[in-house]
Image (cartoon, rainbow, N blue to C red; front, side):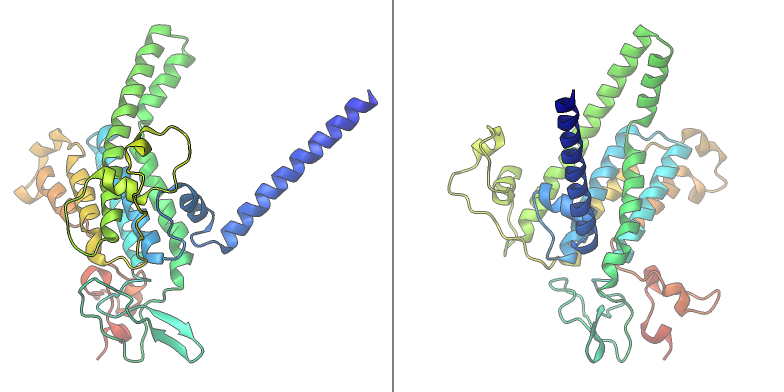
Length: 342
């Protein structure tokens, strides 16, 4: 009996120490790793690590938003549910643009960094974008160091879109049928959930393949047609002996491509198109067509206008504070240096 108690005590101590070690590592990653614990998990498991680049971190989140937007086209219904999903999609894209404002120029003014001599514009903050970036004269609109502090806000918006895109209605139906002890209904509900989940994965995986090609293109000096397999083979981590059939198709001498830390603003164009297309594919409320007071109020016209406004454009969250009450803060909320004053 005494031996069992000793063994149980040692087991509990071992489990406690293991749990404390995991908790300590999680806290350490949250406090010190680029992007926090979420950034560490993504770097460990996603095909590309972004620990050395804020721009690459943001690009990775934009790719996730594109995937979630396309999954939503499977499970989101029309009417108020579709409008709510598109509103969430727009909020997430806005948050992405706010985060981008910390690391890309806003109104052609580059972000600043704090130095020994004060805040100064960052050189080449918009590398490869082709924009005419000018230095602010004694003024800073945004600071690159604020990027990390705003990441949880972006992650919250992305998780909201991801949850809204999931087959919740089918999952609830399965739960209700199982709770009611209805074998036939439970089987049908399970099959319906499985079909929606499979189609959701199919569409999300298709966008993931596009993301692979985009990441591969970031490491190329010249534009060229690529294929998913070439991108995967060049981006993959060192293969493990797991019998992965895709790895078996990769040439043995293929070299891993290096992804640059600078991501130009124009590289967001394909992701922007995916999000816009997903917005248009969300079902409309057909009954609202007859209630429109004018052609501009028709659901199709409103949807096209809303989806057309989904763009990647870095902007300031605090631009509204730079303008008098009732004033405009400039295009896409981008404030001018010195609050727009001459």
